[in-house]
Every structure is written in structure tokens, then in C-alpha cells.
Image (tube, one colour):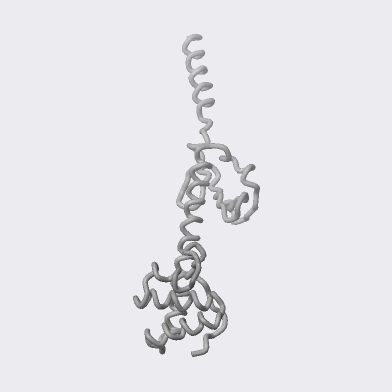
Amino acid sequence: MKKAIIFIGTIIILTSCSKEKSVEERYLYEVDKVVDIETGDEYIMEEENEIIVVHTDGSKEIIPIEEAPFYGSTLSEDYLRYLEEKMRERKDKLLEEKKNEIKAMRRSRYASISDEELLKQFQKGHQEGIEMSRQMDMIAELIERGVVSSEEAPDLLEISPELIDFEIEIEKPIDN
């Protein structure tokens, strides 16, 4: 009987000790947050090196990332990689939107001008030495229309190809 009690006591002690969950078991990585499955707290990273903890009662607190209970685990590395990738995608998307906006503004700026007239305006402006950004803007529209090729642009602008930037914004309206 003593052996049975000792055996059962040992099993109880071992099972109670093994109930401590590892970081990977306790914290669940979801799409844009980490959730503590024991308390229900959510850990969301919106700023670099800061985590917003949303408690189950709705209260929020901001903690440094180093103080997050899962910091240093493979879970935090996966979460940080995910966030970095998401930020990179967002940055790329914003850059693409900005490029499209610049192209649309350029298209509307020169909509009433024919291809030949725009080429003449560029040549005249280039001879008169107007701002390089305006010259590049005109060349970019001429390339978009297929009047000149991107290989011809450096020769027409008389600059090296590395200096060309067609993603520029023109702030002042161009006189037609």
C-alpha cells in the first residue's frame, strides 16, 4: 500500500511539474499579433522596438520588445521576420502607388500636347537650359508615349544614365 501511495504521489508531482508550458506552447503566433493562450493577452508590434499589450479587460500598455515574455524565442524571431516582411511590402506598395500617381499627373499635364509638340518643347527647353527635373519629366512622358526610347534619354538629356530619375514630382505647372 505504501508503494502505491508513493507511486501515485510521484506521478502527481511529475505531472504538476510538466504542466509548465514552453514559450512556443503558451504564446500563439497569429497573423499580426502574438496571443497568450493562458491569459488572453494580445501582443501587437506597431512601432519599432515597442509592443502594445492588449489585456483581456481592454486595457493597453506599451512595453519595450525586450520585456515581452516571448522575446528571444523562435516565436519572437518569426514574428519579427513577419513584421519586417510586412513593412517591406507596405513600403513597396506605397512606392508603387507614388510612381503611379506621378505618372498620372504627368499624363494629365501633357494630355493636350501632341507627341511632336512635346518633343519640340523638350528640345527648346533643353537648349534654353530649363530645370533638369522638367526636362526629365518631359522625356519620361515621351518615353511613356513611345516617341523616344529609354536608351535615347541620356543622350537627349546629355547626362549619364545613372543620373536619370523619371520618378520626380513637378510642383509648379508647366507653361504650354
